[in-house]
Length: 167
Image 1 (cartoon, helix red, strand yellow):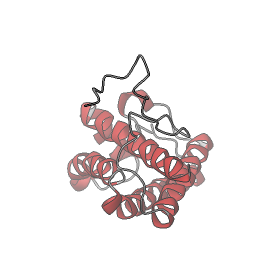
Image 2 (cartoon, rainbow, N blue to C red):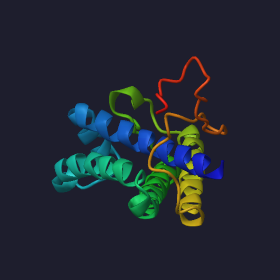
Image 3 (spheres, rainbow, N blue to C red):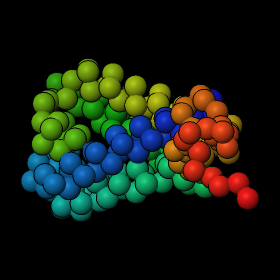
Image 4 (tube, one colour):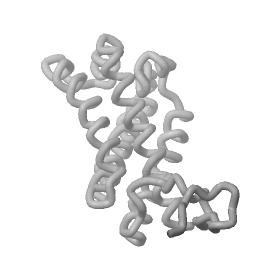
């Protein structure tokens, strides 16, 4: 059961980073504007505006397979802590640029709620990393023949649902 919890945590981290990356790539102008408003020097805005969503997509893919889950999770934590630090510094300076964390869907200005949300994602990501280290046998996919927490059972040959022909 713990294995499924770890797998679901990794899946949720992948969804968050995948959504963020795709949303930033589809809103290139908004991404560049947000990167600039976050204080990235003008000469780096275009590069960071392209690299950030690309890295987010790589992280999204890396947290799923067991052999890359820990490193993908650590990369996600580094990004989240970096984002959160930048948000905290800007808030302390009284600046509230648009978040654009999820492209055009996240154009509200940053605030303390941004830090609370990031703390939740950091906690989820930390759980995924810890679980991936503790349970390195986490399945690569949820089996279709077994509900979460259930057990697989084959229908008996007497079952009307059995399509197995006994020879």
